[in-house]
Amino acid sequence: MCINGDQKEGIVFLVNHQGTIQKILHDGLNLSNQLPIGSLLTRLVVRESRQKVLNFFVELQEKNIAFNWEVNVQFVDKSVKSLHITGSVAESSYIIVGAQTISAMEDLYKQMMSIHNEQTTLLRAARKMQSEQDHENNKFDEISRLNNELVNLQRELNQKNKELERLDKLKNQFLGMAAHDLRNPLAVIRSYSEFLLDEAADVLNEEHFEFVQDIQFTSHFMLGLVNDLLDISTIESGNLILTLFWVDPIKFVQHSATTNQILAGSKQITIQFEHDDVVPNLYFDKQKVAQVLNNLISNAVKYSEAGSRVFIKLSQFEKGILVAVRDEGPGIPPDEFDKLFKPFSRTSVQSTGGEKSTGVGLLISR
Image 1 (cartoon, rainbow, N blue to C red):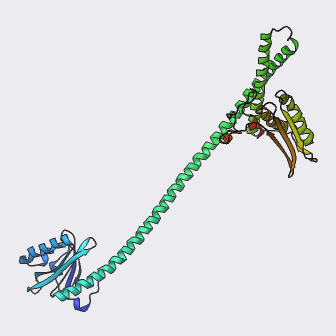
Image 2 (cartoon, rainbow, N blue to C red; image 1 turned 180 degrees about the vertical axis):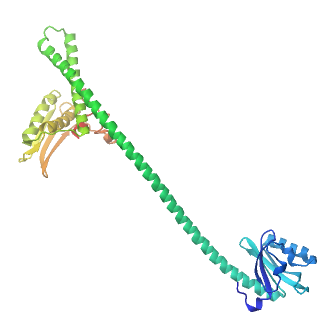
């Protein structure tokens, strides 16, 4: 520490809050031997001034500054001389300055405060830089922790996805096997019920005839449901096989409209078919597309009131065709749109003729 010439005849040292000497910063009075590190502040003065120096330290503790206290000190040559001392707070310690004159003490004190302030500024800047560095390190540690958690979650997600894929395959296999085993018995029941209605209607009383009709209707519905389940199982397993032919779209859609007109006629519903004058032939699976189209048309008929109309429009669209089916029914509430295309899901809209719904027609169509 550099002290100007005018202030060399003085002493500067640090004490802690218990009054113990921590460090001698400057000693131009050769008093260091009297103040070994770890000794008490009272060692600086003669016995008669010890109470006074204790009072000085009490004031320093209470006010964080004690200015110009005069105490007696024994120098190296055994002479006792007056020493003017001043103390103030310096970070976590007290800095004490002493000189033989008031002016020398004041100048030394000002210089020490100036040096201390510069050091304090540098120290605060260093602490700020360290704090910022610690903050950056903490952010890096947090990012690393989050990244590790993300990797672990990704690994768990992949494992869950593999397990779901395995279970989904098992579900499709079971669904396909169950539906396949049910289809033949249901087909036999439907065939026998149709035979009884055609060949034995004369020998059945009215009640028995209605029973057979119920059997025929229910078996027909159940067979349709089983076929739908088989279609879903095939589609979701990715094993759908397409048989492709060149098809005239106008004749194809007209045939579906005519087929569904039989059901529509029982409800006095008219199916109107419109098409562009020229529609090119296309290459597709007639059976699969007919299933989709019949699902859409029968759905429109199912939810239309008697005497209304169902509109089918066929038009050329880019490199293919667009078939639009529209009805005059009540429509689906907007807040129930999310139920569409979900298996076995039904909206609050009821069919107008009491027709049953499997809840999978639109799913298959999609």
